[in-house]
Image (cartoon, rainbow over all chains, first blue to last red; front, side, top):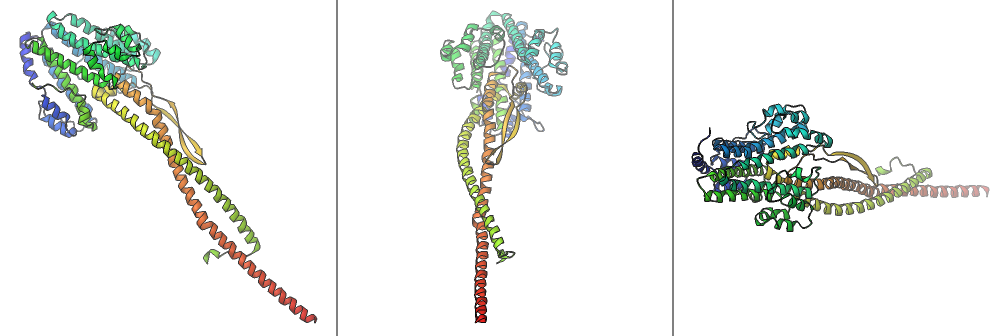
Length: 344
Length: 206
């Protein structure tokens, strides 16, 4: 059911109020163990979560947080007017479906039973493929990939030869990244002009950072028989040429500084080797972008985007903290990777 | 003197005992040499072990931090899914090696794990760190087993040397001394007897 943008925006404002506050996020991250974390979580809109009997508590928690996040985005994405809705569906559903396809391929490659593969999937309904179960039940990677025939992912089939040649699944994963990047590229173009800026600031920035990280991996000597065009199907403000420089340069700092202050700030943890902090920086950047976008226009698409970004950051925070608490990681260590929301 | 029970105070037995003690003393000397060599090996091994272990602990901490960061960044399900793309497991063969007769395990790496998927950079970073220390962990385990077995053998050798030096050799010496004094006593008695017989024969002739 598609409703007017104003209705969705008003509804989104109400939903933003249900997100975890700064104090709640901090309190959760400072829990002394997973039991206390669940106790404190019970005091939030998440309510009491039971993971008793789960063989892997962090994975059970992750599933709960994913389900909550998907429930939230479903409330919005499916109600949003046509063009914006189509973009959001591509951004979220296609992203998660691509992730699920990768997990199915990896599962088939490593010989996991189909139930285990299905358990590892992001709990969404199939978006562009008829059934995840059918894919997971395939006898081999080749059969699973061939079942993508007739779907928008059919390009993956063309990489089966490379998969067989290298006995490696990276060619299949790269082409899935390619499909997703192209779809996003097309979906952004369909957005109304006034809404594109914030999307550019998020989607393109994110793609640039992810491209940079892939380039860094190549620099560190990671294998790949793919050429740069294949490796980076969509580039934005960090061009293919810049990415080539990242791979080949001896003076990485100079290249990073040349990317501009906004990129240099997020990428700075690369010097200390803490690559995961770059993702935290990226999440923080997305948080700041949508927050300032919401402040500029509190009655438009910016609010929807802000809610979706806040929800995803909250999910990522909780998954990380839940895992960390189950592993006995200190709060101080965990806090480094948590994006604490600003006081409302 | 229960130790002397069964001792035959004969020249043959004395010679046998002397041959035995000579053999035991030579064995004891060899054991002392072995003990000194093992002690030297152990001291050197402990020094190397200390250095290697502290280096490995630092590297392990780095690898563990990188893995923690990957888990927090990607979530446990994605990490496990990506990790499942590790093609072959680590394959090892344990072979016996020996130093001064002390057998210890030597680990030969037959194949290392191979990542065949497009790993996320955080996980690639962590797997790189683990990969770097994989060999060091195995070498350290091998070295620890070696040092442990050398220490065990050193203890055993030391106990053997002590037993030989403080119990076995002195008891043999005592037995030899006992037989020698017995034999001396017997030869004196024999001499006296001979002299007496000689005296009696001389007086009979007169």
